[in-house]
Image 1 (cartoon, rainbow, N blue to C red):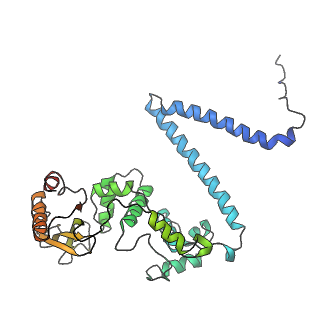
Image 2 (image 1 turned 120 degrees about the vertical axis):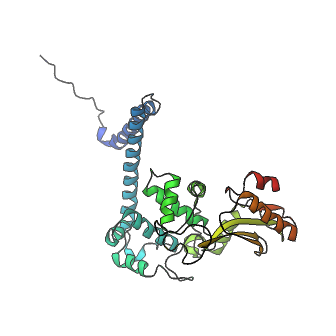
Length: 320
């Protein structure tokens, strides 16, 4: 004969303590889950470690969805006309996210509490320029490292199993030629947050903007001519160039289809110090010889900034 289970003893005023009890129960559950998950992550069994990582990621996704639901519910209670507008940078990133996820305009509008008409208007005006443009990149076109970082990081979010070489291949198909080492640096780079608009009601006005600009760290500051030089190699296409970057229509990256160009620029005056042309990808000795000609013509700079390409390794460091 099985004895009946005794009821769980409850305090006399338990209805008034349910909220505190709920929070305390969740805290105890968190400790238990983290203990089990820590055992799985340190397990000698690869399957157990993988299962622990999968469970951790599933929990993180569920909690992020709950967090997003609560924030959306708060924003939805505000009248549409009184909601704060998205900044031009945020509008472009919303469209980028929609393309990455493959959402329709209606789905994208629903998730960001907008209308499909608004999304369609953003798409129609995406190539506008000037201060009245609806969409804007984080950095100007002539200063786009952060833009490349955002693009590479967006690709990795879409293809998390793809390595840096595979990402470089996908970018090459779109006409953006980056080396695997450059892709790695762009993945590790932190994308700078957009500067706030000059609206005092939003960000504190121009004073806050100028203060944030002053806080941006710079390792080397050019203070005079021939103080800081920068050098890099680029490709200048000929005969139609790289308009179709995939095989079998891709031209070889050498003359007569393109020139390899070495540019040396003075950071203070923004003037071109030296230009060198190569029929094919130059070797380290050829690049060093060109830099020696630049130095002999104008004198050596105090600082020389380059990337970490194969042309700027041991021989280049000895030249410096």
